[in-house]
Image 1 (cartoon, one colour):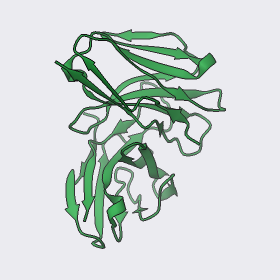
Image 2 (cartoon, rainbow over the protein chains, first blue to last red):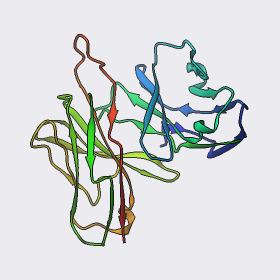
Image 3 (cartoon, helix red, strand yellow):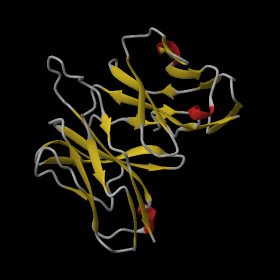
Length: 116
Length: 118
């Protein structure tokens, strides 16, 4: 079963628009970690944020903000005033503390295109 | 500088010709793993290793082998590559045990290896 669902396959916006990426996860663990990664066209994975399951505080970092809601098992990501450089694939991922393989379960990714 | 280094970064090869993608980390991490990335599927774990000589299958191990003879290296071996192994591959490492000053659960990824099998 898919543990991380990113329902939006592609999002296209015009520069300066806000864009919100949805991430819904599924786990039975009480301790887990959620991540967002950015993958620009060059292909590398750029770490954006890690949040543990006990910290539901929303976070803002510059134009990026994250909304973690355990009640709905969601960890959504918003880019405010988008820029062309934000064009990338964004992945949400889950790591469960009780798993034996310490793997990251990734969503399918959302491709964001910001047009000038 | 903390690094996970993969080689080659880009490779086009032919069906059946054995190849190895190397991965090396300089952080003395116990844990290393390989992922493949495919459109619409995100990244999926191929194999992982908890320490030297300790390896295990991930979600999609078919057609791959790994070895962990040294702590820093974790090569991915395709004994007889096939076109369905065309993918973007990532190596990752992390410390398993949290110690003073350690980033703990921080996961470090290599830059990726684009592999095409024709």
